[in-house]
Image 1 (cartoon, rainbow, N blue to C red):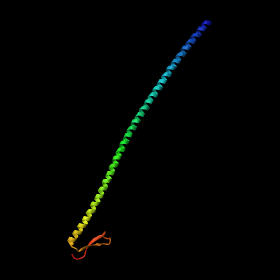
Image 2 (cartoon, rainbow, N blue to C red; image 1 turned 120 degrees about the horizontal axis):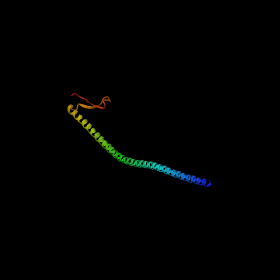
Image 3 (cartoon, rainbow, N blue to C red; image 1 turned 180 degrees about the horizontal axis):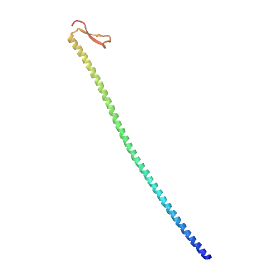
Image 4 (cartoon, rainbow, N blue to C red; image 1 turned 180 degrees about the vertical axis):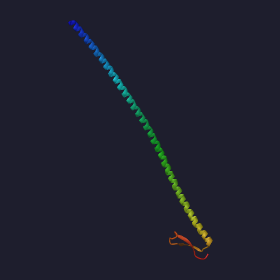
Amino acid sequence: MYQQQSEIDGLIAHHTEKERSGMEQIQKQNTMRMMTAVNEALTKRLKTKEDEYLKIGRLNWMLEEKVKSLNIENQILNELVQTNEATANALRNKLQQVLAQVQQQQHHHFDSDAQSYCGSNYVESDCGGDCGGWRRVMVGGG
């Protein structure tokens, strides 16, 4: 009986060891599956972040190129504005010269017409500010 008890204890110990070893193997497999799943998730997340980083890098480069292009366009427009302002100033000065010349010619023409029409019967007189300056008045019959 002692021998049977010893054999039973041996079988139980062997079976217990076999079960413990099987449980350890299952635990190792589960741990490996979990580590693999975590690793895959982290790899996927890292890849997503890396793609975002590259996308932001490309977008940043495109924006830098756009800023360079806008700076060049701005310089061109500033030069065009300066050229247009210079042209406008030159045209304004020329127009003022032409208007002054036309006024002078009209004044001279008016004097010539008045003298030829009326002879020397008209003279210029200050109207005291009521008529805006000088006027021609007749000094004799005519």
